[in-house]
Length: 366
Image (cartoon, rainbow, N blue to C red; front, side, top):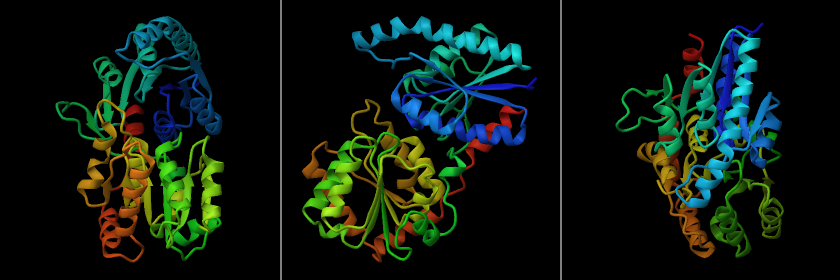
């Protein structure tokens, strides 16, 4: 019998699952007898990420929180089924092990699992990933016995700040030349990495396509590594090829460590996972935060790197032409060999270590 079970609850994006996987790596290292499982939503991205991880998981029909009547109706319709499914899994794990801890990693999957855990007397911990906690996280924090956060949160002095949470496979392996060779790139050429998170970012993809199509001079010094998400990989690859730009384009990179290690500069969204990986890789960044979150938490996520001088933020105008112009200006200012890029690289090199996953695993093993 396993001494303990840890059930991670999170989903909706890879950014809620992959930090859980990072913590799980450390847990099983510290105590190989620990049984680790996951609960996620039925979204395609959750199923794809869990399939890559190869860990046991349970799917529940969880739906996002929201103030709109339709969102509330969907939540009410599925809530009971989610709680029942989570309760059954927690009961089964409790029978088979010496005790269950539920670790919610934020977002809409967590609350019904936390509700089920409390009903079963299981220990509950919350991992808050974003600089601005959402409603679901606030709800769970009031019910958790421990709250870990990647960022200091104003008004929450009891939440334990552990720093960025990063999987080993997201850390660079070898030096920049080695990472570029692993990706099939020129080991000596300046490398621009473009990331849209686990699902890609359509407006960033469109802006890069526009720049390639007009043969923008700001792209000429670079070789490009671009994670597009599922929908745009072919379109982006064709645009780079037509422009004669050396590029490696994939819908999703796994492992992504060599991508971070290859980068001289990164253009990306500012999801908590992306910012954590950028900080761990000490990579200078141009962030375009997702513009439609009501709390604008991606801009807040970028704050520590911007404050350190390791990143800048551009507005995503949701307009291809304007985004392309802004990116062109930024890339011209941050051209390979420029004083501005060198200064950002020095600032990024001074970022602190990222081992939030190990710190959380230590607390859970106590």
